[in-house]
Image (tube, rainbow, N blue to C red; front, top):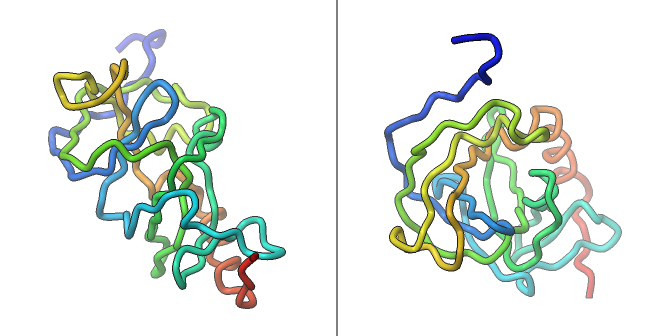
Length: 173
């Protein structure tokens, strides 16, 4: 490999059941093994005096937004409630996304150059074809497979755990 060519991630042949959500002009696949629930925007309540936390049902989650994590504008149609493994814990994170389009088997079909996403690029495992022939709506041509474990740094996950362990927050009314 010449030094002028970008390094490519290895492509895994294995497919995985994923939640596929809209993210502006493309779609993002998130493996279901990390997902506890999908909820609409109105089913998540901000926590009073804690802008970093939201409540869904009886559980508190650290709030995050997929768009800004990938260097894009925020999305506000739905939430994917995740439990991301970190050390010996599972961190409850509510990831704000575009609409959930489907749940289906997805496999990475093409590697992406390292650094294609300046922020959080380590979480993008690769791309897959997402056209109408594969059941995707609209003019979406490709999708990205994400690894939620790599979407946040160890320090960010530690901070999230600390936020969740803090005093029991009150829900806003």
